[in-house]
Amino acid sequence: MAKHTLIDKLAILADAAKYDASCASSGTTQRNSLGSSGLGSTEGMGICHAYAPDGRCISLLKVLLTNFCIFDCRYCINRSSSNVERARFTPSELVKLTLDFYKRNYIEGLFLSSGIIRSPDYTMEQMVEVARMLREDHGFRGYIHLKTIAEADPMLIEQAGLYADRLSVNIELPTETGLSSFAPEKSGHTIRKAMADVKLRIDEDKAEQTSKIIKPGNMAPRFAPGGQSTQMIVGADTSSDAEIIKTSECLYSGYKMRRVYYSAYSPIPDASSDLPPIAPPLMREHRLYQADWLFRFYGFKTDEILSSSSGGMLDLDIDPKLAWALKHRDWFPVNVNKAPRHLLMRVPGLGSIGVKRVLSARRLTALRLDDMAKLTQSVKKVLPFIETLDWSPGKLTDMANLRARFAPPPEQLSLI
Image 1: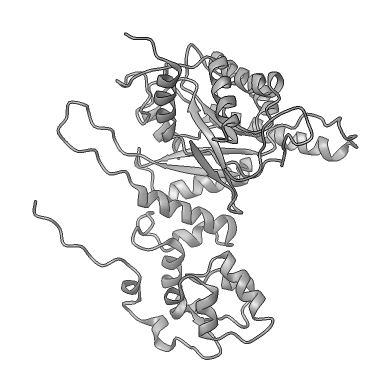
Image 2: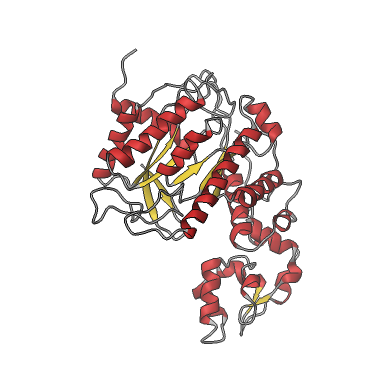
């Protein structure tokens, strides 16, 4: 077999990394090399793009150290029994690639994950070495996200947190039953302990930073200042949306996750099969992200979101906020000139930016329907749920077929 060139390895391992969704770069400290001898930055606009909540875009080299793996997780394309082309970087090769890409202004940081080779400790050592070389040997001050390995020695994860802006440990699947069935070599207890250790270390670091008076130029090392995130596979097992959402809520509250990422799964057909690949459940993934947003930023409780579900599954045809509103029509219409912020946040079609605009505009004038058309992207969607100075929905809010106004029309099935 011909030896892989560096570019060959990059093609294989960058493609293998596309299944890893947990690479957002928001939340870390703002740091750059201006006025110093280092290079790189966690700031600015920017082959993978991670978007911060404020819209800032950071370009990351998203790659695996290797796609060889001793584990045989049934949902993973890189599992040991999978017949995929394999490759492996050395730490020096990956450092060179990162620096070369940065100097060409292709990237502003690195997202590094890996299959498990030899042992979890050996693999984690290699990943930490990449981050150490970048930081200490080359003065790289750009963003680094390391996907840590739950089974690795806690001291290695400690070292990773001192070099990386963000750490993540994959929760993998929503339930212990699903994990034992699809990834029997992994343990939910081990994964949660690793997450708890990272959370505890982040909390300790923050407490230490606030309790000390640190002189300029003598800043103590920060431990994962961007916090931790995780990824959950959606659709590999029989977990319902209700189970997924409740697991996510526990992750946010118990481990202070900065973000839970959902990754739509579809079985990968056998190479010899004539059957087309199954379309991934991307809409289900999308609805879960919307539900996640509701309980993180819109004041919804998970039970409220799930109250409009059927059999524990979110409605795929309409977003969960609209589904809740249709089931709780007694909350509406909301008077946009008088209602407090938390009620405005429940109006379908009004996002946080739209609510902010409404609150600002109504200080100056009583809002009319024409004003709402300028303040929101979807005035058609808000019509049944709001009152303005010159608009009241009347019986529209209680129409029996109101859902049909928003749901996509039924499609004619093909006979071929």
